[in-house]
Image 1 (spheres, rainbow, N blue to C red):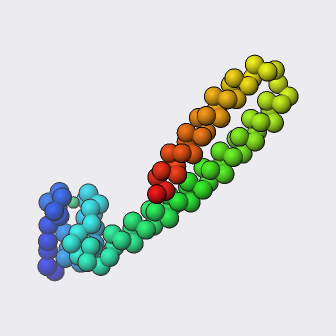
Image 2 (cartoon, rainbow, N blue to C red):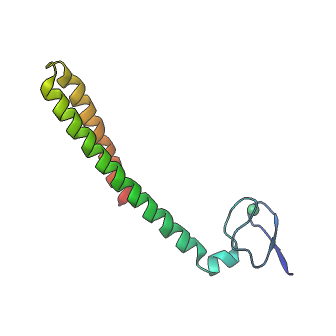
Image 3 (cartoon, helix red, strand yellow):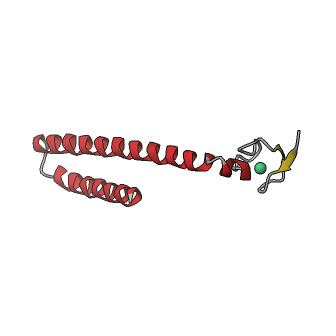
Length: 99
Ligand SMILES: [Zn+2]
């Protein structure tokens, strides 16, 4: 079997290898086969799904805070407001990453 070497770590690899089994980098053959592209889109998909879940989770937290604050001391509003701006910040960060 023909052998090649990993461009990253120098590990000896089969020419059929799409990835280095030692460091995980994609080989030239892997690039040619479009493995990287598939891999990236899988990551993108997962990140997108994760951010949807986080947004849903954040909305729920907002709801809970809102409900709780209605039953609590007005002092709680200070806490609620700071939590709220934190949530807004996280949402903003997420929407930046989606672009
Ligand atoms: Zn390697």
